[in-house]
Image (tube, rainbow, N blue to C red):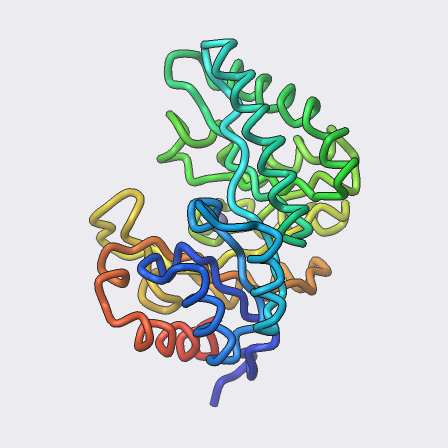
Length: 277
Ligand code: ZN
């Protein structure tokens, strides 16, 4: 008996990075055949592709394009690099629009050569500069707090509380937050911060996977739901209690799983999604 569990795939979305060995055409066809309803597209997979046609291909496979991953990386001690980051984010917003995708995920960035406070102020500045552009294309910007082990180079925004602060500072329907269980499961304040996020209309996306113990690689050793120690279902229930009705996005970077037969891996994603999410 799957008490309180999910019973179908109507809200299952997969990030293309999860099945990294597949190109976008293979991902589209195989997700669709497996009954997956949503796809979040990593920008790398679009390289050399016509983005508008790719969007059509995805919709032609009955997939809803949930988010484009990823923009951000605003902070740097170099003003030239900060300007370049803004340019890249503008391109990402255009790509999202061409793809027919409503949301760009922001991995906010950090620079270990400066303080976290300065990095955070540069993130704030970067989002502020991008916002009119996002508005022009009607693309949502979703701030994803990352686990503090990435606070040196990937994200000076580590907690959901910080992400909530940032989203509330902008107070815009286009700026919100991604709740990713991998990054936030350890936080003793997570339940309260999820409620706060939802109450302010800022809960834009929900990412799932699991934390393996021991974790062998800080980046590429994530597990399937139920393989590790994250209470995925409990967190999903909090997210839904906070009013979230969007997709459950499976985002797994794993050298181990990428080396397996991806068809079998996809079946395992579906099974563990129902059993443990
Ligand atoms: Zn994520």
